[in-house]
Length: 152
Image 1 (tube, rainbow, N blue to C red):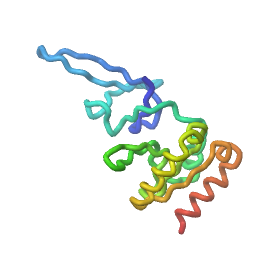
Image 2 (tube, helix red, strand yellow):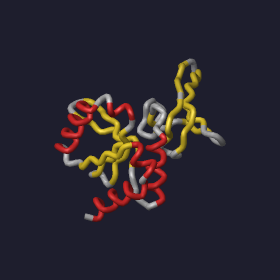
Image 3 (tube, rainbow, N blue to C red):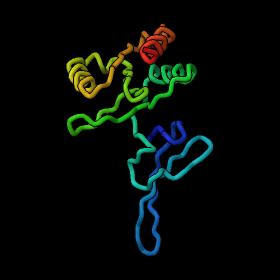
Image 4 (cartoon, rainbow, N blue to C red):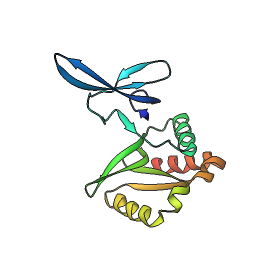
């Protein structure tokens, strides 16, 4: 299973290993990266260090790299609790700005997304949405909008 390790900020393979110590069976999760492997801390899964994700879109990866280049600190794929359920937002910046990358999936869930946005705004977040094409064609404009918001 592909996971994004928040500790190393790399993609890796999540591997379940059953170990028997002193007659007790114990399950350990390992994240294997290209050149290294480490135990997934803490030993229970899922952990705050590892997020199991569907493959992230190319637009999300491009936006993440652009945010890093501009020195904007963020949390990618942040889980936020709303009404007893967890939702994953694409990017959370300074604990107040949420950025969502709008792909084809979002075109099919417009009503759900608008309801979720209202709930997030009720908690004090500001939500910015960028279409995938906007990210691919005008990434600098997207980043400028984010910086303008953060500077106000």
